Image (cartoon, rainbow, N blue to C red; front, top):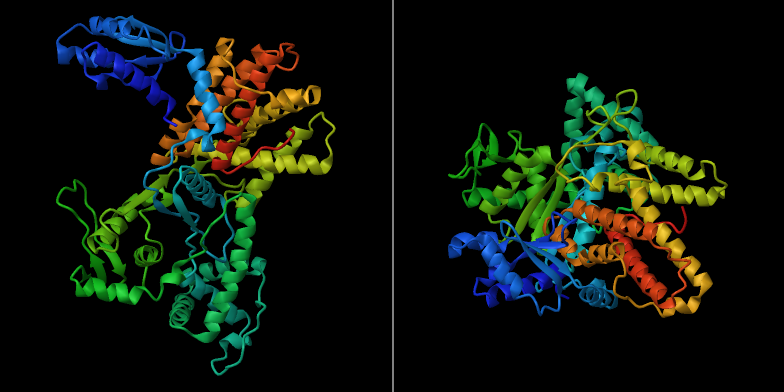
Length: 589
């Protein structure tokens, strides 16, 4: 199906053409004065210079050519030359009926679906997730879901930090504590135990202890660097320990990401490209891209058009060690070889913008990607507390993500059970569902690059621009439909959309009609906040209609059946949208 606004624009372009003007002047937009009209066209203003004519004269001539339109209810030319438009109720009804009967509400399939990889998450193994991991996880998950809904082939990769000095630090600390472990016996040739010699809780204590020691004890750090070198060069015992670290960490990460309803198709990490690096380095040297600068291997990425300094991209440190640049470039090689993506999207802190600029330029200069392959960094802002500073615990530490989730679940449980008798298990389950909406909507409703304040009181409110408000609206619609079904099950089967009988009903229908255009915009701009803005407006439009209309007690069966059809479509679209945002609605609240 064509987008609703495109159909209106086509009709207006016909009117401009019929009046003797350039058809392209007939582009229609949503009205910025909804009290005066539903849509507007400012083409006469642009045409004034082109045709050396007063814009109001052009507007009046165009309006006269809309008299026989099957789309416009009214076209009014107003000074200094605007065209105020209202559309016919029948046209809206026909369009929504087409949406209701079509797959994905009539969203047009892309002519050339893209292969997209979304790199998001990025946690380090052996460390618990903290609030800093929240934004990349939920923004990346939503971008992935929106792109899939839009008809593209999308793969999500967590890109674990699982290779490097942190691993050497853990192994070194384990050796100091448990030197008798067979992993440290260089003469051992048998099978290593399948069970790890540590738990996830112990692992989460070992790493920060080792990290702190390395900062105070140079010899300790030297031993850790040596352990890292041995691990990366295949020492059997160290590789076996590393596998234990990965297995235990990934199991814990999956459990925590599951609570956020975040899923990754690939659980790849830096270790997966370790064997790619030597060949990549040799290639860059051989082709003359890389050279030694102050002992390090670098690639110049500055361009003549740059107005600011862009430092070279470092491929290897002066001691020959790899760094993030190295593994990210090697990962690009592997992704191009294994998946051939048209676009790779990286969801990471906006403060890493220069880093990604260097890596992307290096990948292009060294021909690691095809010229048409798009490399995109979605930079997100900081999640702050109410004081405007980065979100911390009461004692000033970085809060573990599972604690934040638990805190919001408890707040939702309190609100759900406040002055009400609710079965414990139902209340707990509902609290989990609504808490997730509060967390995700609270974040995603902001443009990704902006910093925002994490306000638990605001985010858990059932009023205003919040996740719980959206869910409350969906549950309200479910409740109305259930009551009507109890009254007359046959009425549900007779539900057919009818022309709007009130301004509030038409406003709701017009909000529904904008779904396809919103999805296209949200996909093109990798912008979950556009989905949030749409469903907030849609929820508001429904609630205005609900408060002005006696739906359940309506005795006119035809009217009631029309409203049921509209409610069913509204509910389906709201549920589709929240799924793209990564949460769902309960049956009751």
